[in-house]
Image (spheres, rainbow, N blue to C red):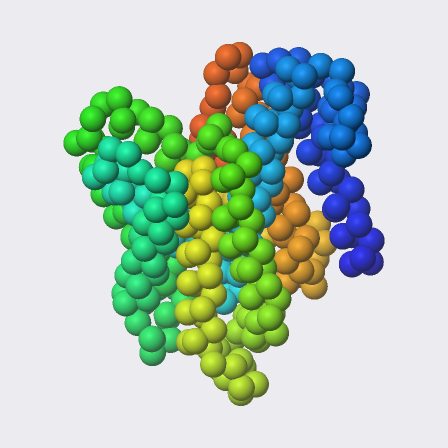
Length: 332
């Protein structure tokens, strides 16, 4: 069953990537996209070099970045929900994404020209600062630590968002407009070179999640249960938070702040496939990537000659889903 699910997921991802490459300001049929891809594989001349450049150099890197970002955010949300035993845990609600955005915005407002190499570092420092703040507020020995972590995460998220807004308010108006659009999420700046670091970080993170899969499942059953099984709960939880911070930092640096994906996708996986597949990170990653591919299609096609920031769409969908979860938990 699991193998069949993964095969269907890979085929769906491949088909979605091909379909999404046909959307854009320049009309491109799916048949043209397939012919261009075949020409790239076989190293033959395409029928239309301009369309090839649009598809290969502009649309494909953007779509791949959308998939990578969605996969990373979904994985981060899934692991946070496991180690905190809270179905509402999410990089955005936990303050990690806001901390990463704060670090990146601080770097861009202080320095007029910033190398893309330093953005992930600044974002990672900001996200780690958010984790340290949350853990210091939640404490280590409190029986209500998990609940306090989420509340501290929400508070720190507002704190870092306010700090980022304050820096934008006092910066150059033209630069502030560009940074504001970036903080709301966009794949418009995607290039082949910008795919390398997110791919490496998220691939390594996926391996770490698989390596500690039994530990996180034990923690999801309770700290005392995990401790009796020999799991170093505090260390594993801290490691998972740091890895999640790395994921959020590289995604924020690549495409800005995108909220609620980490909350939405793990729940959809559990609803569709059941609780037993909740720790199948490949399924979570593929569904998260697919979600972001179609969100990006909406963002660049809903309004003519305009692009809607991704964060607006994901916040709208995620907030509705958040209320749905709360209602289900109240009824249950």
